[in-house]
Amino acid sequence: MRVYILTLFPEMFPCVLNASILKRAQDQGALKVDLVNIRDFAVDAHGTVDDYPYGGGPGMVMKPEPVFESLDWIRGQIEDEPYVVLLSPQGYTFDSAWAKEIAQKENVVLIAGHYEGFDERIRILADTELSIGDYVLTGGELAAMVVLDASVRFVPGVLGDDDSAWEDSFSHGLLEGPQYTRPRVYRDMSVPEVLLSGNHDAIMRWRRKEALRRTKERRPELLEKARLTYEDRRLLEEIEKEQSNLIEA
Ligand code: ADE
Image 1 (cartoon, protein in one colour):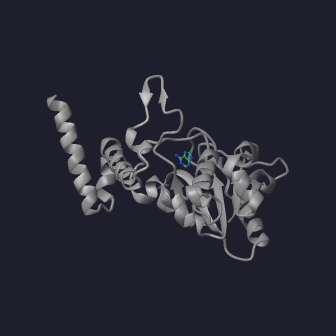
Image 2 (cartoon, rainbow, N blue to C red):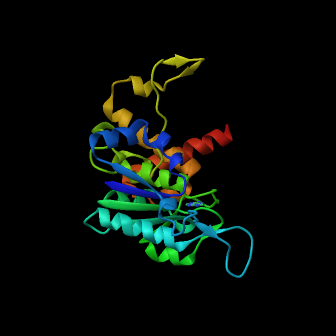
Image 3 (cartoon, protein in one colour):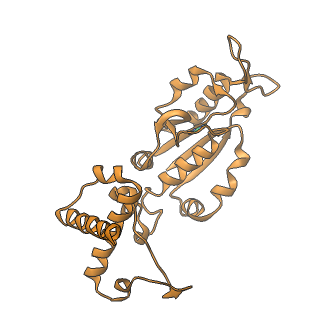
């Protein structure tokens, strides 16, 4: 996957790009990231990228020309049409389905808006507009990093087989249950016996049950959408009984 990030603040990115899995993905050649400074495409000698809003009002608005020009430049660099994502609080809510969709694209452009907003004509450039949540960031850069990080996990070869993105929480529709590592007892807190039992079936069953329990407690709306087996429903009944026993006790 090749990703171009259009931003007025390219200096925000290297820390994130040069660590951990994003770094490894680039070293392996599974990901290539180009930071494109929108200011380099300003159409006047002062490098102006924003202007006052027509009709008045507070704040500045990002001008259309530098964004259009930078996207034209990117189009000249690659053969295929890129998939263009505009980051904005008005977009569709980004989730793991979007991450999988983006991971399938060969060339992706992430446009990080700034200032109070951007000229409406910029929207025409985007194939989709994504928000990372119902809050307003100072700019789209952090959102672009979130989208990149979550999407690259679905690019084949980026994660090892052991920690495949397809195996985790939101791919299964359930939250993951608790995990433990050594030591067996720490400050009087013990690892559940079943995990030490060596009984693979019992461990799998326990893990599934705890994933169901956690999802029921924290994100009950995910349970409604999840594909549950007959066995899952039985485990949920067990959990409900345990809860009512706890309340009675
Ligand atoms: N830009 C500002 N706030 C944002 C948000 N919540 N998501 C995506 N881009 C943004």
